[in-house]
Image (cartoon, rainbow, N blue to C red; front, side, top):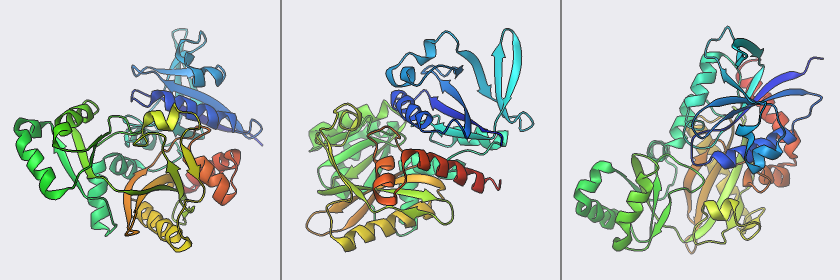
Length: 358
């Protein structure tokens, strides 16, 4: 039986480039060479596409893009090509593909752009489609869809660069509709880059400016004193969710440093430290949110469970969660669903073929 030809797409131009490379290395290392012929297609921080024939050590540690045998290559939007166009020695060759596994985090990869390219190319791909990817990446759009679906969500406001012209009006709106502390986030971003916890009015303007460095729109969310929990969802129309896991961050907020640079300082509880009925309530809401935004393949759905009241509040959906060895999504799938990392990769590819009708 012929091996399935799979391109693993990694890197990208977003601030999450390094995490994408580490996640992709873990995916490649867990792909059975007896089943898959893997092509590692990387995107540099400057947006150059390169076919990388080296090992995963340089993907994890950096330097893959300077590897001597890298060659310019890209996925053609021409559906008759159905693969990678390689530019080598002034000639173009084509590598036909059966599947693409995008392991791209943030803008330019998790926001529907690459998914649109793959739809044009007619190549099945792992993960959510164009709409769900774009909607979940844009926190303002996602929040409005959550509200339309009747899903409980943290109180929030949106702001843009135009609001800086009358910052006093923005501050008045925040104090009227939210309570301190307030979390200020880029509307399109991940790995908690550009996120600030603001205790009072004096820190708001700097926080908004920092978030705007990552995009044109920011979201201001009321802080929640509670458990921070996450569910891993897997599947298409018949998706299932794990029970939630819980993160106890080593920092005040579960930011980029706490997620990826602090070793084992942050603690994970699988399942979360919640009563059984509350665990089930969170799991049910994760599936409802996943279905409301039309997700497919996989997503991680994040919540707060408020101390005192026990209210469950939806935070966000991450359509391409981290796949590093310390990431919550694969840990939840192994602990709660009995899926090893390798079997999880197989299942995601099976789901992509199912969605493509193959």
